[in-house]
Length: 270
Length: 343
Image (cartoon, rainbow over all chains, first blue to last red; front, side, top):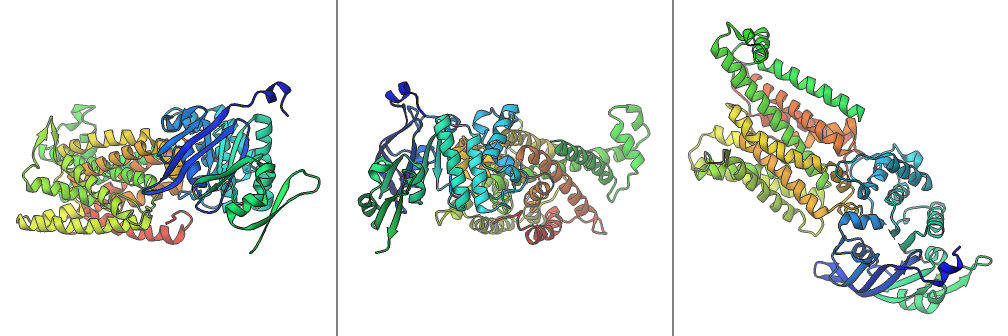
């Protein structure tokens, strides 16, 4: 995929945290998290419930303040970037996308164009093109006129994915973004992301509960445990029974899927 | 957008027609021919010739002022309701259910009690300012009460609003009674009325509607994104803290000014945004202008009923009419449009 010249020089770091601390109220969640994501990476963030995965996504997207250390996107601190500028660099798809008002799905996708528009500017032809392309890619075109309040959970997540793609950012953060989708849709979405990752250099950071989905698609993994990085590195190096045992406190078998060069995990009940 | 424009044009015509028709209604009979001549006299002064001065005064200075005020107040309350619903993600929010209106009435009552009611500053009456302070105080109190369990639940928020509203209503009654004011002034503040309102009242509230409405319409797109939730709006590039603060401030400013001249009129801000959303959808750039027009029309009709429905020429508080019309309609929405209203 990469030319020889490009592969010799490492890609620039687009997400960098150093000693990042963040939390809610008097409840610190993340403690001294340091990690780097390079342009074109496909990174999975794994960890048990309450390990700080969602908090990390929120801190990186400017939703909650950085309390200590640094969080940088493309070299600029998240705390100083204007919300619109940050939203031109990072798009987020969250698990919880409940909507209260009956917006047609296409209007939800159009909202993704907001960071590229001035106040009161209407969608122009380019916006509309991006919106249509995003809906086609996520197979949501036929939902365009349906109310977002009337579609199923999995369909809503696909619309939210289309909205994030319409945001046209170089970095995509996913927080359990496919949790309500069936297997077919899940793989369809991740295959799409993999293609965009390889062909367009889209940087993908995905918070996942599904270890096997991460094992299949992510080239690098970051394991969080109790708000700290327990382990990070290339998937085939860090996805070991020892890591899984220490992070999830569960015995696991890691085995290769014949003919794919990728691995899958089976957890064994105690 | 074409659909929105068509609705808008239809509403403007309806408001003009209703203003004309309702100006003829009242204990003092004015024929529609006389009314038409008076209305057109600014363009052609000869038309007003031969019309008695008292007729002219009643038509232009009593009834038309009241009509205009009803439209302004209705537009403002409905707009504020649309904003509260969008910002707080709460289909039940409106100036009344959030306790903001009653807070404004309380603020105005205190100002009047202290003898500040007639004070002006640079030509502006201070009464809307006091009402605005009351509105903000009530909104802040309701907000704190509503998020006591850590999350801003829509039902908890409305429950807090009703509690604050009832509590402040009682205080208004108590203060007015202690001050030996008549029951009718208490009813005015708690149930709302346009009785005896003049051009000066319309002039008092209009600047606030223009300023507040301007801020709100400027942020109409952000309101769309905010209705997906704070976190998502922030991740799509909205400066949530700042925009939400401005919108709540603007909606409360409009509510304060409206309440300062007409007391607490319920249900308008609750029902109108839902009604308009049913016909043109939830996109705020289209929704909000139509919400204002519909609110104006609704309150104009409600006020006409309030001042003409009793046989002896006595007036009902206009809040009674809006509640009688709005209550059943809202029940209908809840029962038949479950997908439209999510709590």
